[in-house]
Length: 113
Length: 113
Image 1 (cartoon, rainbow over the protein chains, first blue to last red):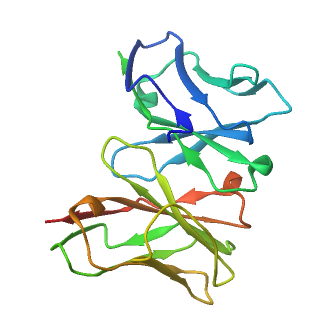
Image 2 (cartoon, rainbow over the protein chains, first blue to last red):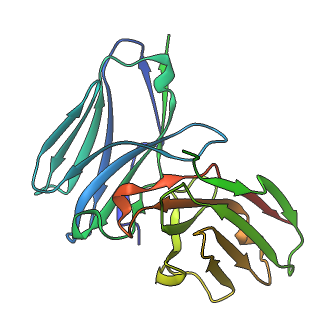
């Protein structure tokens, strides 16, 4: 039972353009969402999060959008840089982040110079 | 401030053997959560330890067990290893039990042959 889904295993984007990574969830108890970035041979590192009381959160080049009615969130990276090439995981939690994380399967983003 | 350290980084074991993986939590953190990441999958929650007690467990059999020590470091033990146990095992430490504050280690790559 995959409660958090990332349907695109991979994505290639030209440097300087916008990267959009998508994530869907099925559990309506999830109310806190996070994006993690993972390089090979390293652990996931936190990128940005959003609570269900908001529909957008920005941090520099990274913006996360949440559509609660569609149970969908997306991560926008603009402009995309070569160092953004990594695997991106969407994760969800209940009780406003006070519960364990449930992860999606990840999307491998490749930025083409 | 030191991060999360996991040892060993790589390990090869034979089916039926037992293995112990270790995690030193980040300074100031009192909670350790363990995740299993199989190839091509997202991390899956195994269990969490808070103040030396198990505080939540995912859908893993009892042969997966753990410990947390007074200095908040932790061990993950797996008995009667199976081929499907081959995965990257990630440890995350946090201050408090919420998933919002995780700092992940680089993981231990376990191969069962």
